[in-house]
Structure formats: C-alpha cells, structure tokens
Image 1 (cartoon, rainbow, N blue to C red):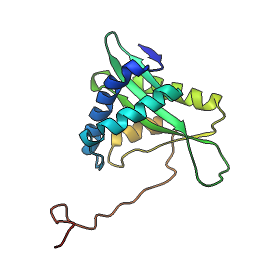
Image 2 (cartoon, rainbow, N blue to C red):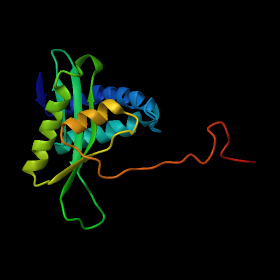
Image 3 (tube, helix red, strand yellow):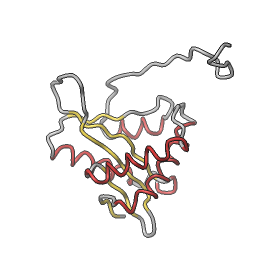
Image 4 (tube, rainbow, N blue to C red):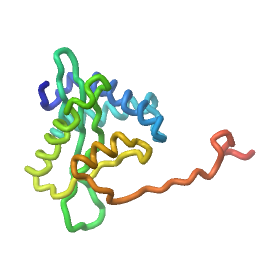
Length: 160
C-alpha cells in the first residue's frame, strides 16, 4: 500500500470514489446529492490535487482510499491556525486495515509542517463508525450542528 499525492490522471477515479462516499453518507442523513455534484466535486478534487491538498492510498491496481484537506479560510481572526479534513474515504474491502489512519496521518503531517495547530473534520452524527475512528485518533467534539426540518419531505415547498 502506497500513500502518495494524486495526479490529474487520478481525478476520474477519485470522483467515482467520492460519489460512492456521498452515496454511503445518505444513510447517515446527508443532504448531498451524489450524482448531481459529480462535476463540482471533480473540479474540487482537481484543485486539491494541484494544490497538494490530497493523498491517495494505492493498491495493486486501483486507488483504495483518499483524503482531501485544506487550511481553514476563517473570516474571523482566531487564536489558532486550523486545518480542515474535507473527505476521508476507504473502499469497504480495505476498511479496518489501517488505510484510513495512514491517510489521516499524512494529512496531519502536512498540516503540522505548514504551521497548522488544530485539525477539524465534520462527521455525520449518525455515522458511529466514523465517530469512533476519529475518537481513537484523538479528535474531540468541538462544535455541534443542529438541524430542524420545517416541512414534511412529501410536502411541496410551493404551496400554490
């Protein structure tokens, strides 16, 4: 298993992996629509690859996982430099084998080398496995996002 920077040639495969990730997150309550965001994420993954803000885990014949990350662009002055892990995904067949930890370690090492002091990651509240993973890696809850549905999913947003 090699952990390395992706190339532009990897973008199509990374996009497919992100779409798989987004589909998985639907069962945890995300509102992101995987297919509708395919081109947007392809562009974002290209930017991450070109900026050195991504790593991939390569198996023998394919990418088995990836991580994307960037320095936070806070609009407010803060007392720490913060990095954000946007996506961390490992193909199901490779989970629980340390691949996610290797990818996260590389992202954290990049952050540390660039002066980042704190790393944050967003996890769906219902994704117990991801929450356990980050807890074992030393991540603590910092902010909590609360959500309330105002209309029944079957109710039209346009009353007329």
